[in-house]
Amino acid sequence: MTLHRRELMKRAGIVSAGFAAGTQLHTQGVAAQETELTFWDTLNSPPRSDIADNLAASFAESHEGVTVEHRGWSLDELVSTLPRSVDGNQGPDVAQVNNGEALMGPMIRGGQLVSLASYAEQFGWNDIFPEGLRARNMYSADGTVFGEGELWGVSAESEIVGFFYNRSIFAEHGLSVPTTFAEFEALNAALREHGVEPIAFGTLDKWQAIHIFGAIQGTFTTREYLDNIIYRRNDASFEDQSMLDAAAKLVEWNDNGFFMEGFEGVNGDDAVPLFTAGMSAMLMQGSWAAGSVAEGLGDDAGFFLMPPHEEGGTVLHVGGVGIPYAITTNAEDPDLAAELINSFVSPEAFAQFVEAGILPAGEISDDLIVEGTLSGDLYASWNAALAADAVGHYLDWATPDFYDVITAQLQSLLGGQIDPQAFVTALQESYAASFE
Image (tube, rainbow, N blue to C red):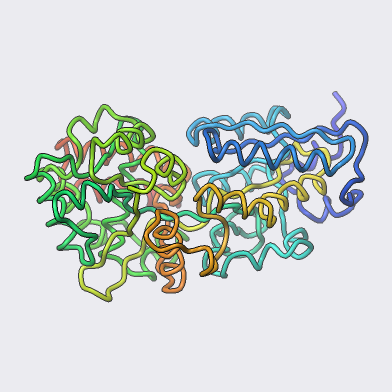
């Protein structure tokens, strides 16, 4: 069997933007005849899927002879399918690649992604996010060091996890948005006393448990510790007091009935319609759910972030950049693929995300923030977290298989099979093994 040069380089793990730069650059409206671009992402339901489809159609219209095919997946499906598809030369040209060791690091080391270093300079991608957030899409050229080196992905959205709330339910019971952690706990207790489910929440598909744990842990931790654990620096360990305190608090909240009854049998995404149907006062979810929440609740929808233990204190909120778009080594024309990625962070894309009430890439200008609206709450919260360097991480970025480890341990913790000390010990054992 004769292998093409690109296939040989891919298997050797040395495909980079340097090779891509040697291909012909396309200008808008000029492209090879009958070129097909495919991109996969997690924009799998309206309004986010509509935005992806609109951007695909717009790109095709502006590039003669180019067709663009979009496919939306769940995150779990994409993570499990993408590497195998690229290895089999059946993968897309462009795909969202989950940050850190969750997927990006292993795919770089496997020679499955194209470095975006030269494209970042060409398109100005380094100016979209401040350095601390941009680092989440960066790795060394060999894929061994996370958080520095070259850019490997570009995020079209920002993300932050907080609490959507039903203004009418709050008003009915004389409740207000909490400003401290103690007030938040008192709010949940009051809702339970009134017979109202406090937080719509589901762990059947596991991932929401990571976010609620991370949100609690973010009130106990520091920037230095969290960066060290995620970027795998300075012998950081999960056997840390902040992790132990967060695990104990999660158990306490569960015992106190802060989460909706039967959450063990509810999917994370299914918690959204339960909330918008008025089945709970709050929804613990990421900013990506804003469009669906706005559609379901309208003017009754609001948003706030996890409050600090003391007014004026710091919380490192789960979130950061959205899952970044990367160029795979299946791309026949990496330059054209880079142009497609650039369209995802264009003014056209930004406007569509804002119109849908979704958090786009970068800071939100003050003229787009309307007080008393869901989007206004979300945008103001994001800007405040960005200005305070208070955007944390997703804990499952820590190792290639950490998602499976932490979600399984969280299910055991919430189910009462293990205690907080056993929980953090299990996390650290898995984390330490990833360095061997």
